[in-house]
Length: 287
Image 1 (cartoon, one colour):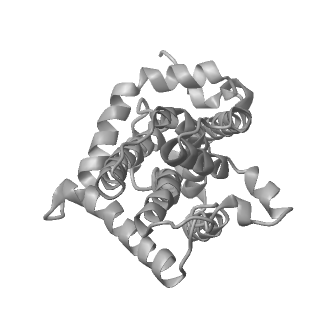
Image 2: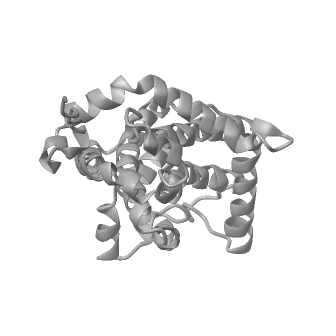
């Protein structure tokens, strides 16, 4: 009688085996088609049951822009630059730049603890790459970002009678650290969400704190030291400030800060990926 063959799972490798950026990129690139299909399903599925369908992807950022503009520019009379006569639309468009960057991060991270839990069928498929669930969620968030950028561009043209500056082309570089940070944090939370089911509320609270700790509705210059220096440590702060520079002011990013942010975010992505890959072999036992 022949002994049953032993199946060795790749997830049984040591944690250090996954701390290889080349391995991570190759693995994600190999499954790019699956990621693309899941990302499109993410976009369509979010609005499938709604009567207006994908139109909500336009209405949602537009309504958010109107509400935040009214609260901060009309009620609180906030201004980005008190030294000049600033229109409410200019304030709204400047605010919206930071809001778009933040939404990419927050949308994915808020859903991360349930990404694996809500897909138990994928867990049972040995060959399915569970790590792409987070990448697909990021793809859906980037689609919403593109729609939001369309709303922002239309507002700039209609109300300010101008087109985005040429430095707008730097925006993909500005968003790269945000995407890497989002993946790293989401991989960790997606894994922990399998074993700790009540981690979701804690993530929501943390996002609220981080939201007000990121200069989205105010200029970083108004924050006193040493709090300003602490806030600059966050790649989100760097990205929000850089987005305003390239989208509104016509300046390129501050490359030194961008490079440091990129290195930190890439390290976070790599650690998050390794943590997820090492722990995913236990998902089937829990689910």
